[in-house]
Image (cartoon, rainbow, N blue to C red):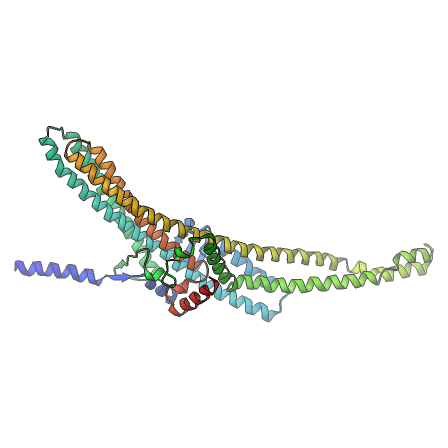
Length: 437
């Protein structure tokens, strides 16, 4: 009976383990794109199926996509411009409105995927923090075992014991806090994805093939100023060429330019036909009726055209505003892409640094611990070295996940998010990229 109970417990453990769905970034994307969601952006919240998720401003402040209240507001302005415009034909307006609506729905889905990706890597970071906290607990218990050796050397151990007890209390609280945060964020992710089963997340290293371009790290395209500029310009051009909002602005600019050009031509002709005004004053005496009649006939068209002239000036101002908005939007697109790529490069360098830092901190810890065991240093020095080692480790993992998240940001913010899962589109992208380089 005892053997049966043991077997049942082992079987239940592994059954639960394998019953959990292992979620990948690809699963994340496919789920969100294929699942119907009602998505809006309200007051810096992503409203998904009537549930609010706070937009992460640390990631949204320099984006081109709709995962930003400002960008979402701009899309509303573009629609209002289309709905109220009097320069495009109804058919053209309807076509552009349809394209804009399709663009917004696609981008809102991608914004939800981006939000879920942020959540995904936050969970992975928290899980690493939890594992490191568990490691820290084991390290504290290992140091606790060394105390008896110090006692044999005649060293007082009471303060050391108190210190270790306080450290254990703190690390136990940290573990509880990390687990609570993980559970909350896992549940949030499951709610977004409409998943009821238990899930675990696939871990990713910074050099995963999934995140590479043409078998190269994205950071490899950023290591020199020349390659950085070529890559950022390439991505910006892709976004600009495929932006429905810019297409709308360009069509409005063309129509406005045509109207303004016609008004200038008409006014020029009108002024030429009225050049006899000055001579008429010399030809006729002020009190003659026919003089008044001639002047009125010649100049009435100008008086009637006063409103048209005002409208013409308004058209010119609107044209300048449209041109400014278009140029400013293009500049902003490139600027945001460059800022994102700077983050990619920065975290890549941080990963290289933390690998060295982590190794040095680990070597230092074991040296300090040996000194403590021999009675030549104190408990605080051991704990400080221990904390330095673990901080270097969490920094390494954090940099790794930030690097991967900003690669997703790069794809999202240049309208290339499908490259993560569509191999054919990735091949076309790589081919065009090679032509650039």
